[in-house]
Image 1 (cartoon, rainbow, N blue to C red):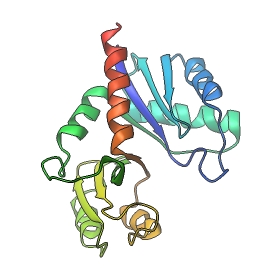
Image 2: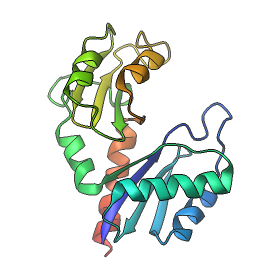
Image 3: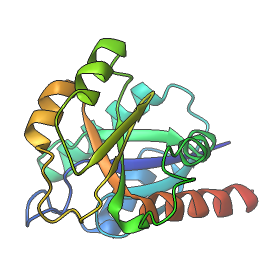
Image 4: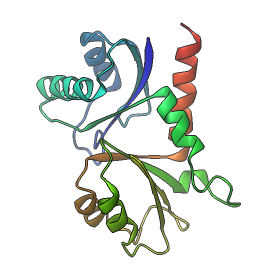
Length: 185
C-alpha cells in the first residue's frame, strides 16, 4: 500500500476556505483512504492507499471537499518516494547559509513543459532565486517571504498549472511523517 502526501492549495489562509483538520481527516477516511494524518492547519494530509491513479484520486478528494465545504481547492499529491526525490533534487542543498524557513518548494499539479519552464526562469525576481525541476519550483527568499519581489500573480499566470507552496521545514516534516507511516505497515 502506497503512502501519499496530499497538499491543498489556499486552505485556512487569511480567514478564507476554512477547514478544521479533524473534518479534513474525516473526508479522507470517507473516501477509503487509510490512516490520514494532518500537519499544521494548511491542508497537509499524509495517508495510505492502494489507488494508483493519483490524478483521479486528486479529483475525488477535490470533489469531496467541494461537497463538504463549498469550495474546491487544488489537491496536489506526491508519493513518499517522489517527495524523497524532491528533497534529493534541492538545488540549494550544497549552498552554505541557506535558511530552511526561506526556501519554498512550489509543488505543481503537472509538469508545465519546457517552454513554460523557460518563461518562468526568465522572470525578473531578484533577490529571490528560482530553480525548476519537473513538477517542482524551488524558490529561495534571501530576505524573507514577507515582501517578495516575486509576483505570485505573474508566476501563476506564467505557469498555467495549479500548484501550492510549502517551506522546506514543512517539506521535510511531511516526508518524516510519510516514512513513519511506511515503517508502521
